[in-house]
Image (cartoon, rainbow, N blue to C red):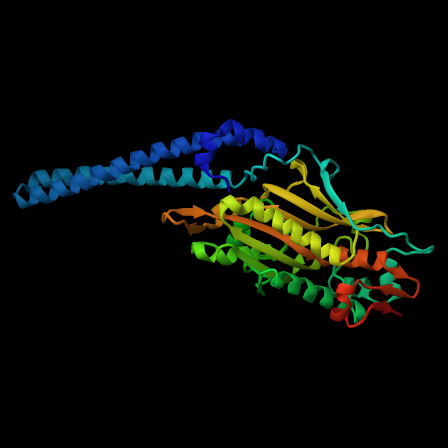
Length: 424
């Protein structure tokens, strides 16, 4: 959530940065400034009324002590009228504050100065490409055919149990999922991240804290009876561990990692992009989250990007890193790098990770703070990244490493999977 003091002092800059994100309701900036001014005036009025009430109540006590009961009764009547006016003022203030809080939640985070302008994924900038795109043998198949040939994933049974987009991993497919998850977690914990196993449901406050609400309300599964939401990523519960907390400076940076299933409605998705493992309603992902001092957040952001890049190198997958344009960024992000791996059988790039710096947008919503050496309380910056999302990693591993009646696995997974290949 943006801070109103910053908006007031930098209105023109805020509008310019919001335009980079193609935010349509720029008028909200002026509306919020005007509303904040009205709130300030209403607060001053309420404070003055309360001050008058306190003074009148004290005067009544003095009149009663002097035995001037008639005068005291007159003042009591005046106090009753003052109280009614004060109550009306407080109610008006509450209405204004509720309106302000609802409107400021509609403003996305401001994009960093390096974010390119653009409207869609086609306008993202490729900043680096690594690995070798394999040349597949004649008759190479896409992963949705390979998982049938090697009996790794059962989409039909998943659809019967739940619906489309809820696969059942089986046999060596389940084993490979487990191997990838354990490898990712070990890789992260060895880099200093503390592992967590958070709940898979969050309450409304947690979803607001990380910015899924109100922006992505229609994309989350909602348990209406309890007003819980199934998590779209472990970023939501993990970051909320520190909601309403003041962290000791000596504990920074806070580095967290977690594996969870993730749940997304993916409303509006269609076409070849959703085939097989390309887009699911339930999928597995390992996440990394950091809470850091503001002055270090972009240095840490680069470290996290390098961390994910090395992981893809160990998996021996061709990859590229993109800086997202304003129109393709999330509501909460100030700067995002996406990682894509090349799917040789589909001949397309598949997104497998986003590494984002949210600056203090999330921490302002969640009131995640620290005390600096001067004893002043400041908001921290939050960052997160996929390390990694499994479905498209699995798709690329299967397609890029197919070799007739077997699928070779990268060296890094041999000990985790217990074999160097998947065979029939």
